[in-house]
Length: 470
Image 1 (cartoon, rainbow, N blue to C red):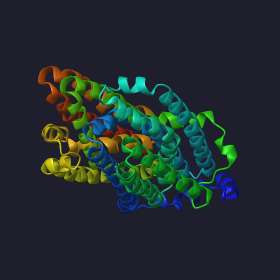
Image 2 (image 1 turned 135 degrees about the vertical axis):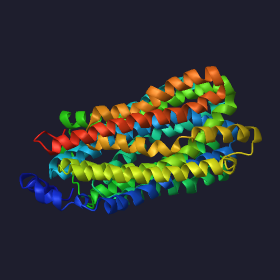
Image 3 (image 1 turned 60 degrees about the horizontal axis):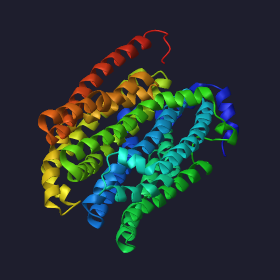
Image 4 (image 1 turned 30 degrees about the horizontal axis):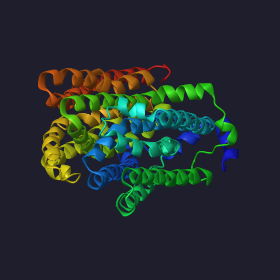
């Protein structure tokens, strides 16, 4: 690919010039974050809209059991996204820091290694999923009534695993080089194609759950083609040769270690939903599972744009950390924290005020609406603090601080939510399951703030000494 000759020269020469001239070297941190954040927020907002519309089409075209089937399949989809985030965020962190240090060769080698890992992990997930599909769905809480709907959807979605992993991982890498608008375009393409095809396949062709799954895979294929063309065309600042795909154990190990935080957050979410669906089925039956499926889509719609702030923070913090500009990295975190909190407050207000109209988009089933509306309001009670949690975990990832990033990613879902959804229902029944979420959010935020205070103190000590940054 183009640019390979210059890569070696830049590695051999001064790292300072390459670092200072990079787009991420802009010292106006507030403006730089907006330039990266707005496209990311638009892209994530469109993706959130797709997830919402997809569920609305299934709810209207298939019914309550279709929504429940979608909720049962979600842990598998989340696991696939977790692999994409594992490789994408881990690789993006290395690439951002390498670009900050002017080491273009390491950045390109990381890009090649991420692609190889995507192919390996995708093959494993697809093979295991297809081979044990019914056992998985029963394990995830599918009842006899829900199982046919879930199986129909998942049996198709699994074949798109490599497309989803590639799109997710490489979208993070595109952002790591400061190309936020390109990353946004990839999401716009995927969501746009999916939203356009859903009504055709579900209603027009009468394919139901299979139609929704086919629309998703075709959309993922379009995204994959766009990203592949972007890297092959030379538009990217990264250049990769076939030899870069040969696995380097140090790069692969660091990719997996740093990306483990993002992976653990989503994998923990997948495990949590499995346990949650089983608890919901026990305390509230199929209706409760469908209710959480709706809540999940609405909270995801509200939360995904907040990821735009994290996606802007990661390359900026990582680049400045690699360039030893610690004050800039800390400033980026503070600005992102304030902005994400303000957005979270707005999302919280919308969910509280418009809970019933939003839930009614998915279904005409009054019994389902009456259960979902108050449960949604309960789950969203601590929504305003979610931005702080996410920015903290993102900063540790950007710095290559794998252990604290991993802990923060697990804190909410495994350390707090999981025990609470097992204990609170014993006292409060079905309501206790939904109450576990805001309690866990508050506890996880307190832990995040305490860890950030310690990290800032460490950076101050490092700035005054010759300590290594990692």
